[in-house]
Length: 159
Image (cartoon, rainbow, N blue to C red; front, side):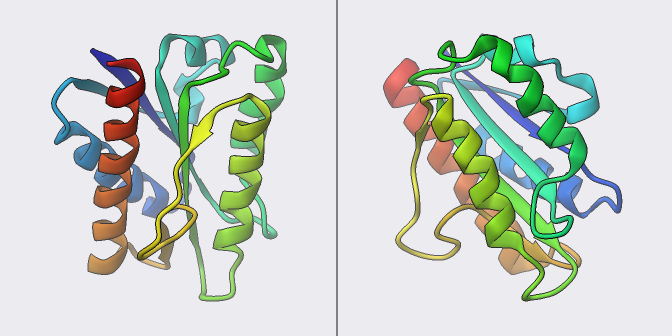
């Protein structure tokens, strides 16, 4: 059975709601177990125990929140050991031009540098699910879909 972590930081609760939807989508995929944890409960060496890792962050100045960046900084100690695992990212922002895509791309850069496998989407949110303000029906649907896609890929590669 493939193991998946959905890790997030959330101050307002919006990114937490997205993480819950991502985990719900992933949970629909048979052969995949899903852990949902705030970043404060995740240590860098915990990442080694998962086949898939999805990271969610609010957008702060066009990038990921400091606690998410700290997790990546700490993960340098395990450089190369996440190679071949599946990754994904999601983000929330206060407005349409608020930096969701730059935040997701920053997270994806870190995942790719670790050698992780990332799958984009030809429809909807291409790089990962985004929410603008409150998590509406559109954003929730994208989160569910993104969780399913990443979990399905993890099952194919590691299940």
